Image 1: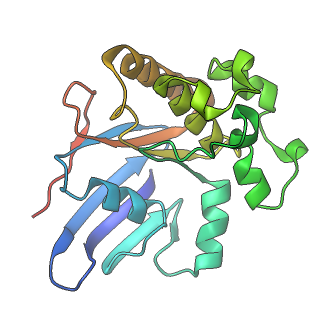
Image 2 (image 1 turned 45 degrees about the horizontal axis):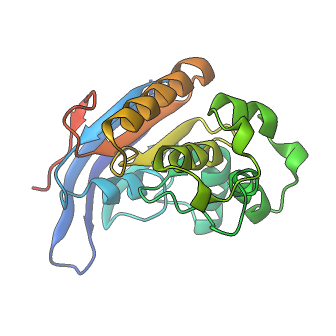
Image 3 (image 1 turned 180 degrees about the vertical axis):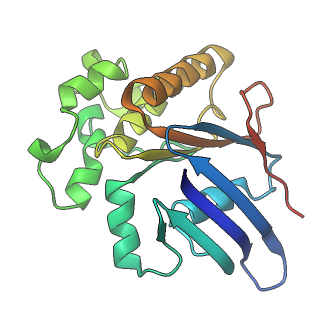
Length: 212
């Protein structure tokens, strides 16, 4: 059964240049899906539409059977907090917050307290290999470590699915391999559905994105 269903989705930012055209895509619960496409092919746009950050110009997106293109922004925001996690390409860490504080940002934004985390912060830090960095600022971390913080932040509410935009795009080969292993563990041990977009052809690929 599909956890996410994209049906005949089209998207344009100016009404003329079609970024996405008649996209159909199904993602099964528990799947690890990599979508490959060149820069400018619409990968990030597709990820944003699948995750309810943007609404498509036309078409439908279903998450766990719910049409998120038909519900309001308030409902989509709730889904993004409870079912959907996001990891952005450039980490998007607050430079003045510690590792621990950055991971808990979604809690603060949702008006929640630390005790509401489904995975305790200590366990989450250990899982991503940053227990000894919890009080460090992002500027003191390597690129790979910053990406681990971003991934941990995306897991705060233990979402059913996590979307990643070029998770290894700014990393060297060693850190890239380490991040891919971490994502595989998240998929296997948490049962989290993983959807990433990438231009790296060395990444295991199960789908290719293209602008038509």
